Amino acid sequence: MSTNQQGGEGGPQWLGLLKWSLNYVDGTRPSDESLKPMSAEDKAFLERVMTDGIVNPGKRMKELLLQLTELLSNFCSSESSTSSDEKEEDIMMNLLEELRDIVEQIDYARDFVKMNGLPFLLGFASEDSIPSEIRKQCLRVLSTLAQNNPPVQQALLDCGALDQLCELYGQVTKKDENGTFRTLLVQALSCMIRGYELGEESFCNYVSCRALINHAISVTEEPINLKRKILFLLRALVTSDYSSYQRIQDFDAAIQGTVKFLEIEDWELRVATLSLLVQILQQRHRVNGVMSQKGRIVFVLAPRVETLRASDDETSLEEMELCEALIIELAKDPSDINVDATSAPLMILAENQTSNLI
Figure: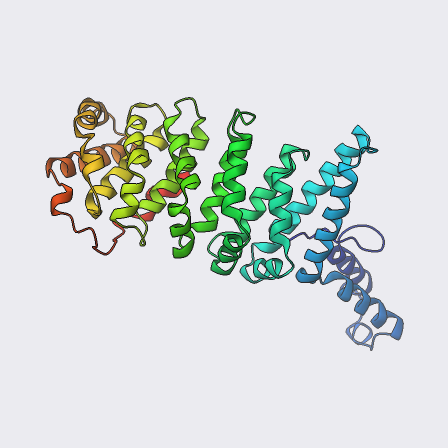
């Protein structure tokens, strides 16, 4: 939360209060003098400073939304100049950052939903005439609002956020060459559905959402940061406590497409892919998709393991252990014939193996 509330003479309120305290109680006065009752004027001043220094987050969110709405109207006006646009852009970025600080608190995030702030943020992020950095900041706020907050996740589903964000992904693909905007967009989608059963099911049942993941994995030229985020979301969905035979089948093409990541130079992407494939084989919801790539996987991993064994750094050790674990699972030669399609899901690997992708 912002701590830059200004005092009457400039500077934060708490700094003004500290200066006042030091001025009136400097440690050199006799104890009897320092303990005498405060004058009415001093009491009034202290009460005013204390009142002004306490920020009501709910009230402040309303103020932020009003300011953002006004600035947005001015920004979209044809009468605005370049210099004023840049100034207003900086102001909007700061306001959105302060809003994000407030909604980190789960209860305030829910209060924001009650203010009908979600449609505003979604519209803000989707407006092509708004500078990209501001739209990215809106996506960051959406992620913060939704993460691990079921009521907010449900509210986003109710207001059609899945449709809107998937459509936005397609609209910005050609313009977003470095993938930064789409990476933040996928993060917002991820925070919106992960850990929330209805959210995950809605995403997995929606053709456009599955197509989004398939596209990002299949296109070789997509930026690494976007691939990491997409892979993190895919892994979260197919290894979720709500995963199933049908869900793995729906993402079979994407899962098989990740095998090519085992051959790239990016360590985080390789390790995340290894973890994904190992977990799928260990969960045994559906394994035929991965097993269809067995020859290619072994062809890539066999020489890789030999290289990793010659290294003694921790990252090489982690990757080698995952390579060996995957080879062992493949050697068991599982198939969907002996897999129970209705079996309950089970999370296998430790959560810290995904921490580098968050």
